[in-house]
Structures are given as structure tokens and as C-alpha cells.
Length: 226
Image (cartoon, rainbow, N blue to C red):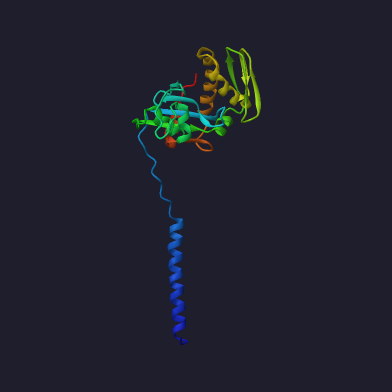
């Protein structure tokens, strides 16, 4: 290589590097493309609160369907018989391990994609966080339970009482053993507290949803908690 060609090659290399730097800088400074998340407004939102049961399996402990337009919600029986493809399970609550709230919503609609349906998934950790301050509930029958997941003994007396979040597992595991009429009042207290807390929360950190940010805001704003 001669002394005359070396400066030319170095100059060419510098030019290439300069162009690359300019292009790279342009790409870095250019606004990132937005990911499209637009979808049709849902007609119904299936809300699922999950927690480990007596067998330590995390299942859907509370399921509610919310009318997106009015914010009114209805509690769904988690022991409702449904079809869960590929499994031998037949209760709605048991759909959760096979796809979370989305699987529960699908099972609730007999395995078909219901037009206008959406879902909200509240994990065990998120549910406990929402109820960190505890909640008020009225017991119509006294009972006690032992929660193996937390090694905690919980006792519930007849009448109004404040339930600590540490006793959440004991409550949801003990209620199924009560008669239907005895479950209604304590379940109402649990659901009202859970939905009220959800209405002030945001997706993320254990709360997942298919709703867009705008749809979530509308959902939370119209949610009627009574």
C-alpha cells in the first residue's frame, strides 16, 4: 500500500463511519412506533380473583361478570359446570390454571369466543395487596379453618367483623363448607371490598387485562360497587 492510497482509504472509512453515525443518530432520535392496541369496546368484562385453595392449587375463588356500559356486576358460581378442553376438570374455578382469567372467561362462554367479552385477572399477590387493610364482612354462621399455605388458623364468629388479609385464605377455603344461605353475607363483604379496591387500581403488578388503557379507565369509572 502506497503513502498516497492510505489517506484515501482512511478518509473513505471515516466517511462511512460518519454516515453510519448520522443514520444511527436519526434512528435513535426518531419517535418509536406505537403498537396498535385499539379494539372494540366490550359488552361484558369477566373479573377473576385467584387464590390457592386447600390443595395449594391456585384457582378462581371469585368470578364476577361486569356490564361494561353500566358498571353493574353479578357474582358467578365458581362451581358451575363448564367444559375445559383437554382436561378432566368440570368446575369453572378449575379453568384458571389452564390460562388464567382468559381461560375462565372462555369456559364461562362454553368454550366459544363471546363477541364483546373481555377479562381482568387478579393474581393472589395482587388480591392480597388490594385487601391489605382488611375488609368488613358479616358472618351468619361461626366456623374456623386452617390455611396450610400460610400455616394460619382463622376463626370467624357470628355477626359483623373485620377480616384481616391474613385470613383471606381461611375465609375462601371455609365458605364452601357452609350452606348456601350462610355463604351469601360473608361473600358479599368480600366481593364488595375486592371490587371497590379494583376500581381504584391500575393494570400491572399482578393485575392483567385485555382492556386498553382507555377502556380500563372507563371500566373503573363506571364500576358500581354496592
